[in-house]
Structures are given as structure tokens and as C-alpha cells.
Amino acid sequence: MTSFQNSGRVDDLLGWAAGLLTDSDTARLDAEVLLCHILQKDRSFLFTWPEHELNEQQLSDFRLLVAQRQKGTPVAYLTGERDFWTLKLSVSPATLIPRPDTELLVEQALAKELPENATVADLGTGTGAIALALASEQRQWTVVGADKFGDAVKLAEQNARRNNIKNVSFYQGNWCKALPDDNYHMIVSNPPYICCDDEHLSQGDVRFEPETALASGIDGLDDIRTIIQQAITRLQNGGWLLLEHGYHQAKAIQQLMRQAGFCRISTIQDLSGHDRVTQGQYSF
Image (cartoon, rainbow, N blue to C red):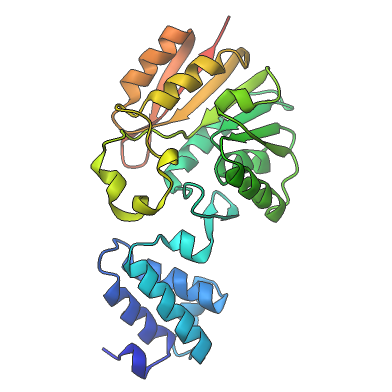
């Protein structure tokens, strides 16, 4: 293989980087995304112009990014952005990196028969990914995102401006206590749901993400319990609550929802066949 030192060609650099990133399950894709970031081009450029030569500054910057990725730093933190739904979002180590699995939550929320001018809240909004995806698809909705951390709120507001989405606003505070109103047609959340002693918290990209956005008590359900209890005070009669969760938590969450007075409770599986989103309707 042509060494990095001897070639600045796109094809040689991709082969070199992929060969180094052996700890990643997506080594080739990681290399492509990092190189696109350096070149400020899309991936089609890499395939169309494999013979393109990087300049010395680009070579140096690419080598630095590859070295950081070798140490485990997530690609999204290296590039400072992540695609989610139809949006391009800025990300930072202050928030969880949006993941494709969470698009199932967006799909289920959009499938609900809500009024044209529905009010919708996203709890633990982080980058604003869910709130912004919903607001971008339903421009007549009023969407609110809430997060405990000020840095997350600022990042979500930045992403709203970046994507020119104006029917959304963000507030700082803990779960429903941050919401400015009491009558929501739907509340959605991708809260922390990993057990606090889960070994995966010290593995892979997760090592670099804020644990406060991942872990929630000994069974991973502490925040979900809080959200369910608070949601019944903020939902309109017939309002919906949708929660993303771990593959083994559906039965427990269904029980918590039943105890709180929800009906029409169901769980939806992701493309891998894992339980991923549990939803229920609240009537009083």
C-alpha cells in the first residue's frame, strides 16, 4: 500500500486511514467523512476524483483528525456536525450525538393525528435534533425543546438558526418543569436510559459523550419515571407521550405508563427488531 508520507491522493489517503482505524466498525466511512470535512466536499467528490492531491495544510489537518479518531474521539465531534433526518446539525461534547435510531421516534410522532396548530414538546433536547426535525416537517406546529444544560440550549438555538426553523423555541430546565405552558398535544423524549453501571459506558464513542445524557439510575429508568409523572400534568386530554428507550425496557415502561393513567400503549421496534419507542395516550 502506498504510504501516507508518499502520497497525498484521495484514494491513497482513504486506504491509509481506513487501515489505521481498525478499532472502528465503520473505518472506511470514518475516513471518507473526515476527508470530506477537510476538503469541504461531499462524498461523491472522493469517488469522482480519486486522483485529487491534497495540499500540505490539508494533509496535516487530515493526519491530525485520523490520529484523534484512532484514540476514539467520535467523528461527529471531530467534524463538529452530524446529519439527522433532513437536517445538518452542529454538535459538541456538551450533548449526545444524534443517532439514526432516534429517527424512529420522529416518524412515530409525525404519524400522530394532531391538530394542524398542535403544540409539541421535546424533553432533553440536546442538539435540538428531535424538536427541529418535527418543526421542519410541521411548520404550523409550535414546538418547544427543553434541556437541563445551558450549553445544550444554546447549541439547539444555533441549530434552529442554521436550518432556518422558526416555529421552535428552547428553554433551560429539568424535564417538564422547563416547559412554558401546560397544554401540549404531544410530548416526546429520548432521555438517558442506560443503567449507571453498564459496561458500555466505558466503550466506543460513548466514552466521549456526557454521561448525564446516557445513564439514569441502577435500572436506567429514573428519568423516564420522572418524565411520565410530570407529563400527565402538561398533556391535554388525549395527548400523547412518546419515549425512546433501551431494547429490554419496554415492558417496564408500559407498566409505568399504565400506572400513570395512559391508555393505547404500544411499543415500536427499530429496523434491527429491537424495542425502541413506547407510546401512550393520556385521558382524564
